[in-house]
Image 1: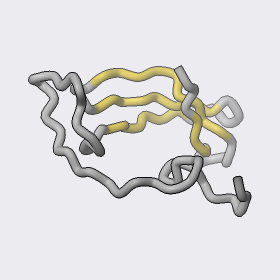
Image 2: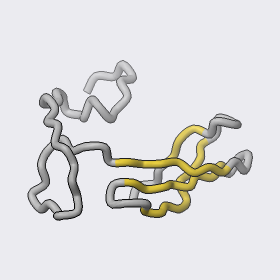
Image 3: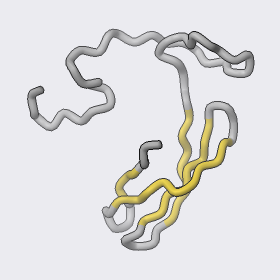
Image 4: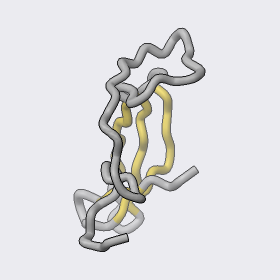
Length: 87
């Protein structure tokens, strides 16, 4: 599993995800901790809708499918920051 990190709102260090708990089939609570200043906080992660239909849907998962236009380039432009570098 990939480690999730975000900027600490208190000291501008990085806070790490340490624990998660499922609240529903599409919602998780994630607990973050900052090793620099000791800040601790929960956050939510929710799946809002689908970009494509699943090939193995569950009866309990009812997610609206909202297709998106094709992404261009070698890297996913929606999840990668453009830092002015060309690939």
